Length: 197
Image (cartoon, rainbow, N blue to C red; front, side):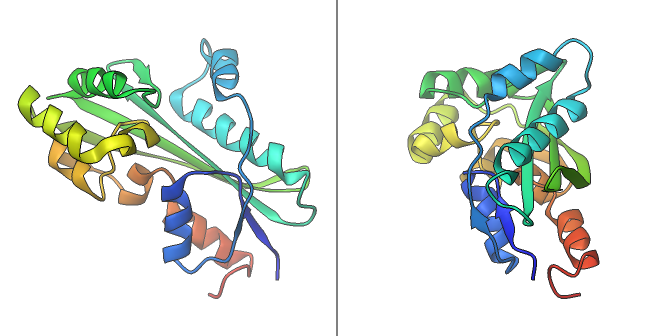
């Protein structure tokens, strides 16, 4: 059986694969994501940037795993043409959530499978989320309860947990929102005989 490697330290991506009973090992990429984003900022779509980041992660890791299927994934958040990164502090998380409050934002997630020098498969998906117009009192309570978890995702929330309370409408796949389009990935892996069909 072909071995699989997840080129990510993301707890949510790891949990998704574990919950789906996909056998894999973890070997996080060490690429400079900001450098990749800056190199593409002027001429690329958000989907192109997410896919390039996913590919760069897989390409970085695949050299250490000859013959393995290396899974790379990344996610971008945009709101009214502005791109957001993972917040680095509670203050940044608060400012970001205030900027998204009462507005629609888009999460674009990409996943690739790389083997050797070849990208075998790539998929890009997006979800549209509308935050409710919550109060600042609610926001401060949310940040207190969520703690450092707000620093681990581009949106400063985990939709599968407490973060659900921030929203009034969600359109799109929950796995895409969590950071990796899982169902298309599973379909590809089944088509390759890597997981049972």
